[in-house]
Length: 231
Length: 86
Image (cartoon, rainbow over all chains, first blue to last red; front, side, top):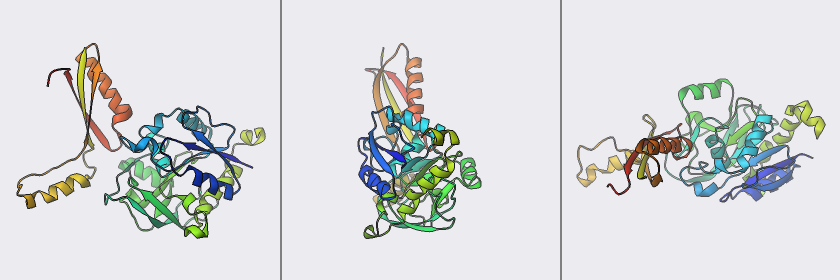
């Protein structure tokens, strides 16, 4: 069984939901406090949603300097899946592990509602088990979800199919309707919607499990042979 | 020496500023005519020990690059004066 670490910053508030949803799709998941400098014996790491360090200055601006981020960067370099959900996505952009930045929503309102997203690429840790063009209903819950980057970066993101998830109806002004992107190596992925909050029909949608279950597919297919034989 | 440092962080040129635009839109109804290009940003101020004003500026600019401003969306303007001078 694959093990995943879920990082807890002061102000994170989705970590238990993420652990619960990961367990639902067959992972072992453990919480790791941001002051730790190692993540333990894990196959990947999730940065959950919330308001790390109060979102002071800018969301993610201070969290990127937490001691645990060294270990997160190392996992990213090694090709292991690194996932940022909502505030976690903001942390990954601030840390430079993902391109662009997440600005205040265009309408200047906090948005909390389900939205429909479309899978644009199946080559990422969160979409490896999805179909291209598949539509998923996922909740968003954010004030700064308005993805932006310079023109050259935007061109690269779309040409390389690093845009993993888009909104079918743009809720926040996000450039190119972007809801989630991955890095060039395709192992680091960030998204504003919350898959863990769509993990049971009782919650209105279980579509988030499609994304989280993709982690297993990605690990099976994408992990370098050396890493597989050592675990 | 002790210096008073003020950093103004604003959105990059060309990045929309809905807060500034909203303030600008309400101005005519208050009787303020002829005001445009309203931009809203944030101000960070702090005291710094440094050997010289140049060193204080250099360190403050480094701090902007690493923490205070996100270069993807923001620009920072640093002002340094010896502490005690207004």
